[in-house]
Length: 125
Image (cartoon, rainbow, N blue to C red; front, side, top):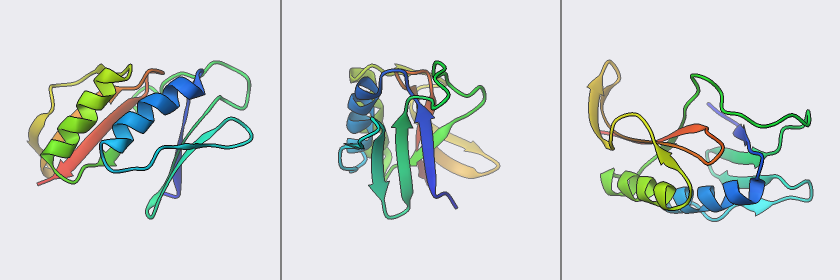
C-alpha cells in the first residue's frame, strides 16, 4: 500500500541514531545517509526516510499522525520500545501490551521519536 514514508527532523544524525536502534530491534539494517543529508531505510515492502524539511522551516510532528512498524512478535515490540527509550525517545499512550478493538487483538508499543513524531510497533494476534 505504501511506497515510502518520510518524517521531518531538525537533527538528522540524532534521528538516525534513534531509528537505527528502534528499527534494528525489528531486524532492519542501519539507515544510509545520501548526498543531501537524508537518511533512508530500505525494505522489500517500502522505504522509511528522515529529512530536514525542504522548505527550510523547522520540523515538527504531525498532529494526529502515527507511523506503525510491523513487529514479528511481542518480544520484538518490547525490544523496539526499550531501544527507543534508550536512544532519546519517550513513551506515549499506554504501556506496551495487548489491546483489542474493531481491528482485532493486537500487541502495541508506542513512542515519540526525538523530533516528536508518534510511532508504533504492532503485532497482530
